[in-house]
Length: 312
Image (cartoon, helix red, strand yellow):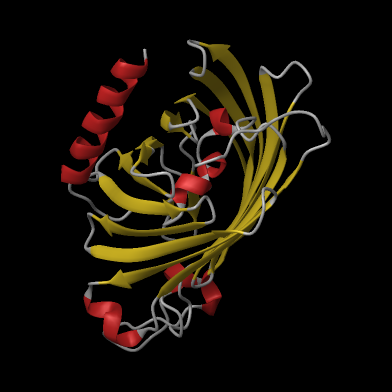
């Protein structure tokens, strides 16, 4: 099982790195390997403790109306240890468009080997959408107001559900998820304007931890996202862990960007992370970069239970 898992992960990483990309709708994260619950419900319960994570991603800093995403997740294993539950909250905005999502997460664990587990997960909740067209400045050939922007989408509530699978051991993980199964849209305005609200995203992730020495570990990881009608967006990240205290890595994204990431493991409960992306598009001259901040905290009520180091 362990040998097969290694080949699966390594093959997946090389394939993902070769995929080309395009823009997507759901938020993308540079620290995706520590924020898996946001898009895969099968991840809940893997911390083996009550865990909370907050992440803020700020794109095109200094550019008015640039995308911003704030994410908060909490997870915990139940007493049976085979069941994990959690909550995911995502606040996403770009320009005058707002999305606020609240989802409950559930996972069930199956044991495949001594330290290899397979989890199946479900996610259910809603997204609250708001977009007030009157706030936009329109430009028409005759200089007159565009009546298509007289409408408003305000606090439109959309329920949805998703699913996922997550296989993991202390040293590797691979996962598949569809965070939102339903595809919703809006019809609005005098011109019968229709806008796609939620697309069905398919996400694949994987990573493996190699021991380079007693003090240094190496973790390649990758994520690939697919939406019907668009090419795949893929990230490849190479990170090093020094003395179980400090992560340092670099990533490349197939849509033409690269970045750096770091994480400080303050103690077995508290972690602080930061990532910066370098945009290679024509917009790079008009903003001050793409920045991502993360903090996580774990609560364990068992003083005798040993928890192995967590690498994702």
